[in-house]
Image (tube, rainbow, N blue to C red; front, side, top):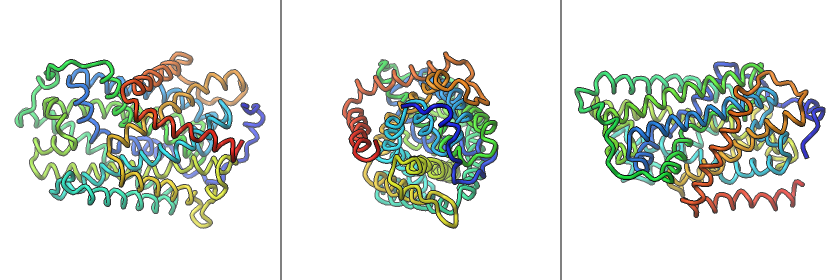
Length: 449
């Protein structure tokens, strides 16, 4: 049952201190999002969609879908600036069961898959930076990935400011690195085999609509992170102003740099070469600068991936903390460290599950599972805008979704379309993913109803 407005207003204040300002929050959005997808996903996308114009169009479409979600979710973030973010919006909009299922999915699927996917890119590029082929040393790459997760957990247990500082410093470094890659491609590429013709020359293979839908899943993995700031809403200063501004500004910046980066990749290399290049940023810099370029960009990708890993570790365990504090999870998960004032049990839990998955699943399977598990919850969370505007019209809304009611509806419809496409064309993984989510229903009724 949806709580009455008075119940929403009377919720006790979070136990976590508000330490994140506007620019720390913007950096967190960018830092979590620009992690591994832009450096690893283009190869798989080019394989599914062997047309450069369609590939760039899909990156723009993914950005448009993401921006619709950001413009809509920002209303809820400003109105309900609580630790747990999306979890809180689901709870207030749709009740305890949907909120629990989101948290349950974060525990068993979503966060561990995200941490694993990001960490794998860190390990692969670390080996590439010293001239080692990660494909030939998979065990070593996974061990490095697990170590990165463990280090990120330790940093965030030490304090939100420590985690935010790491993200803030690394964010501007990797944003600058992508800018350098783009500028170098356009200024130096012509003398190293780059061609505008690469941007229009497809392989001639037909592109099925279903393949475009599956490629969009990989693109949405790269864009994911725009909503993660909401998980740490309880620690953002002046949240009514800073949360919507940070979410929207960060998302727009990401769309611009992602589209430009993919144009740079395709300008330097034809799309069939991109399809054969899982470490596409390194291969682009190899074409422009030789081995020195590979080492340089690999270092920047390592920084980028670790920053995203650290930011994800900072934000997402707050979901488990908020659930336990709400009586929707086991009480031990709600413990706050007596010295550092961070949800250390939740952080440790997320780290252990991430390490387990990084040692057992491929990058592609981790990312596909992540997107399929979390984006439907984004859609249901955004749809809570309609429910809350009816059930709690007097709720304070410092920011109202731009383009309401059309923009939230576009986001919900787009997510529903790619989920249906995945169910039809990636049936086994989709069924397993939704079965694991559904397994939370009897657990809810057994322990928390």
